[in-house]
Image 1 (cartoon, one colour):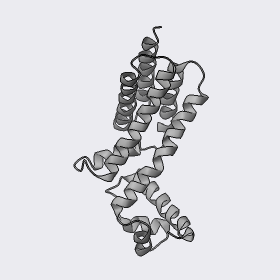
Image 2 (tube, rainbow, N blue to C red; image 1 turned 90 degrees about the vertical axis):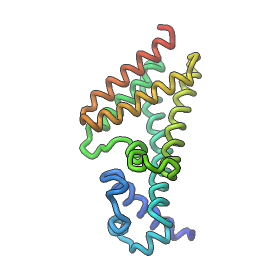
Image 3 (cartoon, helix red, strand yellow; image 1 turned 30 degrees about the vertical axis):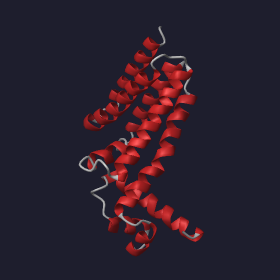
Image 4 (tube, rainbow, N blue to C red; image 1 turned 120 degrees about the horizontal axis):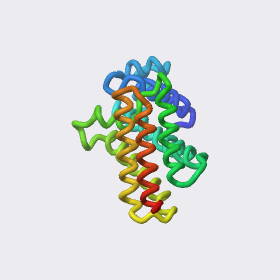
Length: 192
């Protein structure tokens, strides 16, 4: 792709991100994305072969920034490991209080494509969630916690479960409660 095409591709992806995150994948047409990006549908197809290709790019573009945000919240938090993991949940709860918050784009997309387990969007979502879990495992293991793989999986269940429950009830305190549970699990694993 020529270098001059990159700004157009980014503009299309930015429009798709806003629309997909706001309304859901299947609720948004390529015509709507093209109009929001200020391009023709032909231009959109020049940059993305299909809607599936665009959905894959949307999720891939969210992967690194989401993990970087978790890492930043973890690094900026005070206290020990348990406090720092709980800070991720507290920051998510704060974000969930924003009126435009729609939860985890990876989980919402997985629900829309649940009947297509081999879909690229599902594979991208799995890869993202595994990266977050591996990072948590790395942080737990670095603290000397035995059973870091199982504990990181438990924290992931709390994390993703809290996304679902907060979306259902529109009550971010569930995320804070999940953070308290993660804190308790980690503290117990530390032998405190």
